[in-house]
Each structure stands twice: as structure tokens, then as C-alpha cells.
Amino acid sequence: MARNGRSSDDQHGLDAAIDAAENLVGAVGGAGGLDLEEVLRAGPEDGTDENGPRRYDFYRPHNISRTFEHNLQAVADGFAKMGSIDFTSLLRMSVQIEYKGLRQCTFGDYVAELPNPTCVSQVTLAPLKGYALVYLDLGLGFVFMKKLMGGVPDAEDAVREFTEIERGINAGLIERFLDLLRRSATKFVKMEPTFVSLENNANYLSGINDGESLIILKFQFRLDTVEGPVQIAIPQSAFGPVRDVFDPRDAIEMRTAPELRDDRRKILEMVRSTSSELVVVLGEVEMNLEEVMKLVPGDILHLPQAVNGPLRVRIEGQTAWLGEAGRLGQKRAVKLTRQLNKE
Image (tube, rainbow, N blue to C red):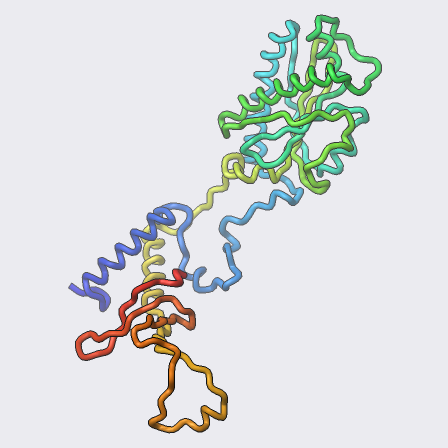
């Protein structure tokens, strides 16, 4: 039985096309449905609509979403809890790590705030992009070393740059921080942190643009009566590959599944009914205007095309196929032999 002027075979073919499209872009009940009115209004430069998902610009230093901050806090809380246990066992003394919140600033401003000399390490946090920083209070670093070497963990009166041996000890300490970060982030992503370098002069840091926005996780370490800050600074742009994990944004679709399916049906019908110019080129020859003015009925034009050579099939002016001339019944025909343009 025909419906809306179409045969049952046409209707079945249209339904099959819609099902195939849904397999590619998701079910109609999902958040990515097409809106017919939006498609018709969209211009060639429109990539997204104003009410839909937008590209998140991590290079612009603006406030992060509450969801993003909440997920980062979960990682930081795990770091603090596991670190308190691990360092208490390692140093055989009471160690408390407290998460003090996060803040944002540019890389240039952050480096300018660091003391000189300092203790800041460049690390990678794959699958996050680029470099991140781990800052350890220099005085706290000397206290850690004293305790690790069997001394009394008294506060350091004067700080200085590390010797090569002290640099190696503190590099191992940073790697322990990275292992804690890896374990605390397991709920969200399988992180593989790597230590790159340790600097006592913040001006030697490189690999991050001065205007890059940093997310700085702040911690306070307390070893008996001695305490000091530790910070993990991660560029916002580094979260690009895992943005959907830390900052998921679900679009809310207000229309029902039947309405979405009807929109898709209308779009496919519109595409099927759109006409396009298709031209089969037997051959082309260049002539000047004087020769063209002298043409009369009966003249023979010599074309640079062999009799059995392939014919060019143009769609809207673009050569898309090669074909062979032939006959179908009482009419001339062209058999398509090779596709050149798949767009």
C-alpha cells in the first residue's frame, strides 16, 4: 500500500536509510539529534548551534565548571589521604597532608611568584598533553632529606640550591608524589606520570607559554612541627584529550524520539528530492572566437578523445566518474566504470 504518495518499497528504503544514519550518529533518543529547522537555517560557516555543545577553549584563563572542580578535588583528596599514610610509613613519623583547594593563574604569573632558589619539577602526566609542574617548598625538601638520611627533621634556617646528590634524592621524592597522583586519578583516567627535570631556578622552566592558564592544586604537608606547601600545577590545555572525563557536559534534548526521527525523515526526503546537474562529456576542444563565428551546420569538430576512450561524468561541474558509452534499449546510455570524487 502506498503512503503519502510513496510506494511501500520507497518507504522501506527510507526507513533503512534512517536506521543506517542512526547507527552512525547514535540513537534518536540520545543527545545528538538533528533539528530540521536548525539545519535549514544554518549557513556554511555554522559548525555548532548556539544552544548545543560548544568547543571548550582551554587556552583562555577563565573559571572552570563546578563539575570539573569537583572531579579535581576528588583526585586531590585521594592524593592527600594516600600520601599521609605512605609518608608516615616511609619516614616513621606522623605526616599529615591537607588539600587546601585550587586556584588559577597564568604560567608567567606563577613563575614570578616562585621564590629563588626554589624546588620545582617538570613532569608529564600522559594521557594529558604537554608538561605539568610539581612545586615543593625548598625548606620542606631539606627536612625530607634529613629524615630520609636518618637525621632530625628540624626546620631549615637557610635554604640553598641542591647538590647533585640532594638533587637525586629530591627527584626520587617527586617521583613518589607522581605515583600518588597516578593512584588517586585511577578512578578517572589511567595516568602514566613521568619525571622530566628538577630546577632550583624557576627562570629555567620552559615548554609552557607565559599566557597559559594553570590549574594549581594546593597541599599543606605537616611533619610533626614542621610544615610547608606542595603544589601541582597543570595547564588547562593539558586536559584536552580527557576533557570529557573530568568535565562531562551532557546536552539536554527537549524533543521526543519520534520527533527526532521525523526530523531525520524530512531531511532525507529533502536530500532525495534535490536536483543536481549531471553532464557526460564526450570531448572538449578549444577554439578562438573567429573560428567559432565561422561554424556552420555540417562542420566536423575534431575532439581529442578516442572513440573507445572513457567519458567524464560531471556532477555540478565537478568530474566525479569515468564511464563507457553504450545503449540501453532504444536509448543511448553511459555505464559508470570508475569513481573519481567521493564527496
